[in-house]
Amino acid sequence: MTISPFDLLLYAGALFLIFLTPGPVWVALVARSLSGGFAAAWPLALGVVIGDGLWPLLAILGVAWAVQEIEGFLLILRYVASAVFLVMGGLILRHADKTISSDSRLTRPGVLAGFLAGLVVIIGNPKAILFYMGVLPGFFDISQITRYDIAAIVAMSMVVPFLGNLVFAFSIHHVCNVLSSPRALKRMNRTAGILLIFVAFVLPFT
Image (cartoon, rainbow, N blue to C red; front, side):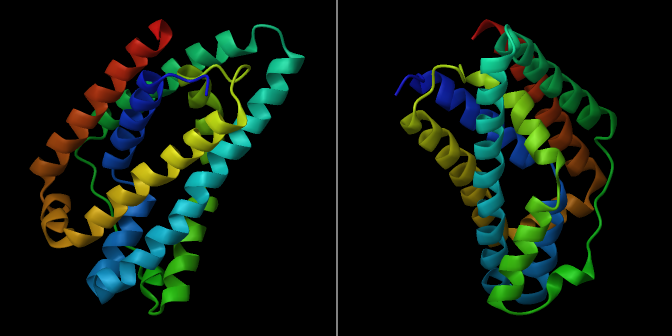
């Protein structure tokens, strides 16, 4: 492997921060957990993890091709990655008190229904691959990575959100209290936003 443990750990931390920001997956997990408990939520988390592995893999392959064709592409993307986190952190701080709503179409019972709902939630968001294309080169030198590096990156992209989603589903009642409390939600979003901005300033120097 060519990537350092520090780079992989920094990437895992960024994934965790992104997980902490409420979004479509949170909405889906809340909806299914409230309608059928953990038994209804884990298939959705399993469906989500498929997309969590697919998007970074496609991003790595696309960036690797671009690196061969465009001189200085990695340097450009390193600053793009920094800008992405900076903008994300700023937007989260700006809308820190914004609540999220549920979607009854996500509550259809059954393991297969939950799994497909997870796939739809994560794969139905084409912005995900653009996010990974902009972010991955900020953490890793795509021109030098090996197949083992790719496996480690994809595995990390799957494991961190998956474990987070399972814990989220287990503690859904407490989490729902947070989501229904504007003050607590605002505090959590502010913390995540500030940390994402911190990552944005660290990336150019890693």
